[in-house]
Image 1 (cartoon, rainbow, N blue to C red):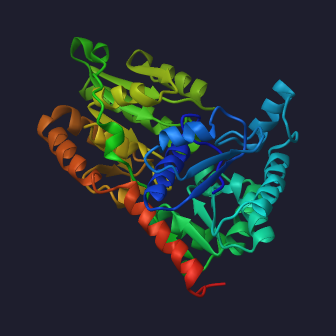
Image 2: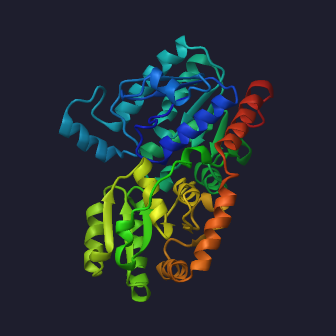
Length: 401
């Protein structure tokens, strides 16, 4: 399995998904060799500690400067700043070097299936397939059209995605929303694409986390946004809707947890709207601190412009907080006890925020029914679907070339 981040060294939902799926696969008696593209403090001993009850997951690291969600221009800036990349001066040099190392690993390891997560790992997956002849499964957590929020695409990234999808034996999409993009934007036959929704494991959220009562001082209500501060995630629509909410619920605090290239611009927007005293930027948050934010909030909002899935709403609901989702998200397909609106409709976003803030019964109903629903959205179910795909590739003739 090829990826580029693995908890605790992850900066987004992809690492969470890789962890959840890999652990669940191990519990289905699948032995996973997870190849990471960079040196981080994840060792085989650490992996065995995380998955001590299975003991079937090994971690292999490949030296690289790849970082999650990095763009080509941002990578070049970082390379120029640190001047210490182990590989090349551009992001695509890194991707190609990773593929070369993947070829070496594939030539010496024993395995049955190649499973690659997102475009930075796709050339590595192709290289492993070429040297081994083993079936290749691509896991599409996001397309280039999602990452750019529909504002143009990087033609080089698109070319890698399309080439890999054409050569793969099977493609896993994290939602029907994503499958439709793959079929329409990349010209892939629908039968080649299987939908495997992401999940969540209740066992990871059984610890007791206290609410951050200081945020609720003076009768404050709390509305939470968490995610990368990028065009894709729609944080500007969150702030614009917040302005309208404050007309009706002036004691509302809007918490933005995350970091990204839009952070300064969002601060400026909050100031220009005259609500900077009601918008709190807390930076990137993970683990128990994030759980505490979920449990403190009256409502979690995900106004993504294009969200292939979206694990954060599941995390919010499992912590007891109802959610308002963008209709342009995959998670909206499986989470029915949630409020939904188009990302661009800030009036409707605001209306639904106000409804939850002003009606305790609505908040309680969404929370209780949503919690019951999310208990069935497990990584075990996702892993079982992946195992079925592996089985078909190994023991049945391919239906689509």
